[in-house]
Image (cartoon, rainbow, N blue to C red; front, side, top):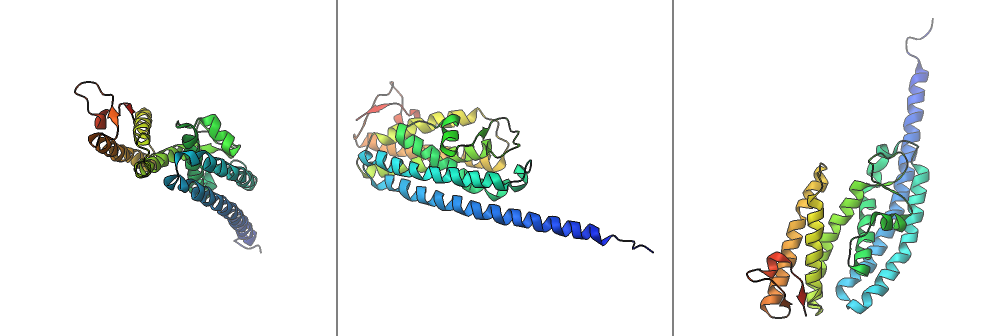
Length: 242
């Protein structure tokens, strides 16, 4: 008489569970390497807050060296993620990938004082950004990219404070103008991601922080505002001259 329960069924499930656990462990190991490189880049770029503007290009060049390591880590991840199972494992690397996107975005801003393009981000990581929300192979999601951009606003508000400390009074004005333009761009998006939406709402506080710096510099006559009659530089983000 045959058994009512086929124990082979449970053997197959156990084997599948063990394979998945192994896959997750391998992915976590690769992600730790990505996270370690992120910390190395962060340590380099943090020095811009205590460096003169003439030293910034050298720091960016130093940071760029590490991005080749990030390309290697992403390549390793690509080989570990099973085909058509990107979303199943995405949570294991999404946080460090958002940080990597932020670091690339910050590097590009420090070099050129503008927002990184999708093509440039892809060049940093040697992997595509998914603009169609239809990921089948390993790519950078739009949400990861946007989280990186939002992180940039907080870092720039911090840089505005430290720029004043180092005597670079024009940088907060340029940062303020950039953040206002960035905020306007985000307002064009219909954000449905709760986490991203909450972080986007925080951009206005970063802008307000920079506006207060600009206002204080204007009151102290450390900058001269080119404003239209009746306009307040702290609320308009108008260009200024030193």
